Structure formats: structure tokens, C-alpha cells
Image: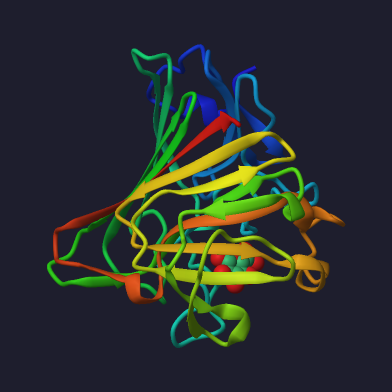
Length: 301
Ligand code: BG6
């Protein structure tokens, strides 16, 4: 039976897509095409499942995640925007901005000639005006579900004046065991260590984990690869419009303080975030735009 939400759409759904509710009044899109299965929440334009055929899920999702209005989903790819982390001057404002809990509009879903499914969602200042961020904007999110996954977020500055913002495609990856993964691609990169009050340091070699890691690597344009010997696969995260990369795992103590993270959940996740954070905070001129994009590809080792 068609929901009111489905009735409100002004396009025809392709066979690859169905609309439903993850919980009461929490609308989601399920995609199943020849390449992959995926699930996307309209709130936050948030993809929380991506599973190419022949693989276990690539995105991690907490078993205790909320699927409620005004609460962010713990897992998948929450969108941090228009700032990354804590707000610069007002600690009362939501961490990572407001996009991840905002009511996006579903603009279109279509299959392309390669059999991939393309989903477009939009947020505007007219539809979601926040008094604490009185900018005139359009925020478009384009998701392509194929053998790989691409998520692009474009901000159009609708005013004549420049606008400053930060962002991240805060990607949670499903891994076998945090003790069995390494991350390649950040050798010799400079980072701010959030665990050490933003102390700066340089990383040498691959990244491995034996404690909480919360680092913003700056000057990083290149792809990063997770090598997961336990699942016998690699996940390559390539990007554009971003020169900062966040690596995060909360480890035991911080994970225990997070209500929406299931017991032991930190062991099977790692975040590799395509960002515009800290030194990479952006200014968009009046009537200009900026796109940040990531493509996630998985391969057997
Ligand atoms: C990361 C930050 O991007 O997100 C961490 O670097 C933070 O400091 C983490 O803890 C999760 O944030 P939140 O707001 O989703 O709990």
C-alpha cells in the first residue's frame, strides 16, 4: 500500500527502489539493483546500508542506533554540515551541524544505463531555517548505488556574500575486528590529535589501532584504503573537494558512554571521513558552490 510520503512524490519509482518506514514516520528508501543493496533515510539524506553483491555490508550500523526524528543514525554516512565537530563559538549548538537530522526532500530516484541507482535529496534554507545559521543555501546530496558507492554533497550559496562552512561525509565502515585492520594512504601526513587537545603531529606508515584514535589529517587529497585481513577485503575511499581526512575509533571507554552504540560495537567499526575540517574549512563566494564527494569501492584481497 502506498504511503502518504510515496503519494507526495512527483516522479515514478524505478523497479530497483521501494519506499517504506524504518520506524513510525521515519521514511526510508530501499535499493536493490544488479550491483548492490542499500538503504537510505530521508532524514539527513543518510545512507546507512551499502552491500555490493558478493560482500558482507561495507557500511557499519550500530545495533542500537536510533531511527527517530531529531536523532542522528549511528552508522552509515551521516552528513556533518555546516560545521564539523563542535560549533566554533557556541557549545550548545549540535555537534557536527544540523544536516544529519534535517528533513530532506527526495527529488528523484532513477536507474542509469549501467544499472546503478541514483538518488537525489535536497535541503534548503526555506525548508529548514535555523536561526543560528541564517545563510541562504541549497544543499544537494547525490547518491549512486552501484558496485561502488558515491556520495556527493553540494552546497550552493544563494546569497551575494561569502559563506564559511565545514563538513564531513562521516563514513562508518564495517570491519572484521579493529585489531585486524590497517589503513594505508596517510604516511607522512600531518594531523590534529583530538584525543590530545588538538596537538599536531605527523604520522609514519600505516595506521593500526590499540586505543582511541580521533585524528584530523590535513593536506590530504588522496585515496585511503582499509586493509581488512579478517574479511579478506580492502575498502578504498577516494574523494574530491576535500583536503582533510578524519580517522576515528572510540575504543572501550568512550564507546561505553555512547547510548546508541551496542556493546562491543567499536570492535567492528572504523570511521574514515572525507572532510572539510579545521584548516580545510571552506569559504564559498556569493552565488558559488562547493561539492565534496567520496567513492567507496570494495575488493577481495
Ligand atoms: C568524529 C569526531 O568525526 O565524530 C569525534 O572526530 C566524535 O570527536 C565522532 O566523537 C562522533 O561524533 P558524534 O557527534 O556522532 O557522537
